[in-house]
Image 1 (tube, rainbow, N blue to C red):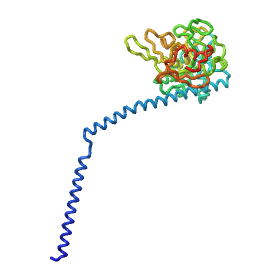
Image 2 (image 1 turned 45 degrees about the vertical axis):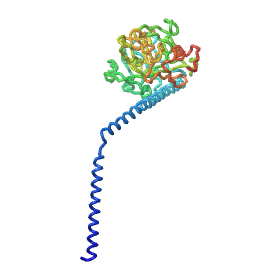
Image 3 (image 1 turned 120 degrees about the vertical axis):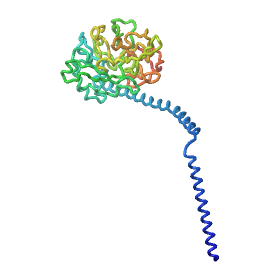
Image 4 (image 1 turned 90 degrees about the horizontal axis):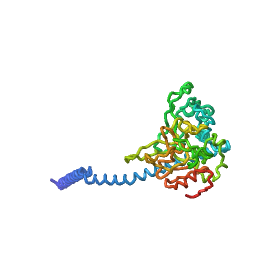
Amino acid sequence: MGVIDVFYLAVRDRLRLCETTEEQVITKLSRANRHRDAFTLVELLVVIAIIGVLVGLLLPAVQAAREAARRMQCSNNLKQIGLAVHMYHDTFTAIPPASFSRLSVDTSSLPASWLVRILPYMEQSAAYERAVFAGSDWSNRGNGINYSWEGFHKLIVPTINCPSSPLPISRMDTARPGTVALGAPEQLEIQMANYAGVSGEYAYGYSNGTSAWWNGYFGMADYSGSIIPVDNKNPRPLRFASVQDGLSNTFAVGEQGDYKRVRNTDGTTTEYDHRSSNFYGGAWCGGGGDADPTALYGYRQNYASVRRGINFSPTASNNPWGTGQNGGWPGNHSIFNSAHPGGAQFLRMDGSVLFVTENLNFETLSRLVNRRDGETIEEF
């Protein structure tokens, strides 16, 4: 064997040794990696605990951000309503009346609400053009015919619903035979609103006087606010000049966006949808307002006066007449409330929107809803 052969054998053995070593190294690394394919139980529990803590910290912040966005949308809704009220005033030189109520007792044709009259200024001209005001029964309940059913059946106007409200946005009314004869279905889907006109403060001490009518279970029908009916107690629509305390010092519209929670004697709580639009005709009916407001049809819809504070929660033994439905009827001073924590939003007559805390002094609230008491409250 020559020198070259010896050198060749030595190189070959070295290469084999290197190959064997490399394979061993790869094998060891593979085994090590296989041992790290999964977390240990302790590591997994620690990761889950960290994720749980993070979710617990982030969830309230996310919910708060969502509510802030919903409250801003609610404020924008009220601003659009305020703009519509101003545009109505520019057109007719009058604040939209709560309703043009009958001047004689007639249960066959309950009038349209003020919300119907501002529809053209909220991009709802198509529905408004189908509205028939004279002789039409907007309640779908009386003995008359709803000549406007086609424009308002299944009509949903997002502007009049608060996104935070848990209340339903529509109700089903049974159409009267005369309305069905016009082609209406037997069941009409009618929208309900979360915003109600402010008709003033509860008139303590008045009875059939010039400022209010006492209407038994339906409460006092007050006229000291800005959204009031045209009837035998108020013969003509109001103007901005009628708001003697100033447009920025007087509330025009407020929220009715949550359940009224009645505290029972056994410690439980019962929820009622007692907003002033939750009755026959929904958002589009102005209610009764007979010449005799103590008559059965003397109730009001889609506007209310202030008799109790914001978010008032009565006990079962302290549920004043008129602060909600009694026997299925809306009250003349249904409670202003909202699902926003701590208060409710109000539209002022100048078109601005204000969040009002539920802790506001009741006397101050009463001054703010009265257009002519001489109290100009600028800060509260």
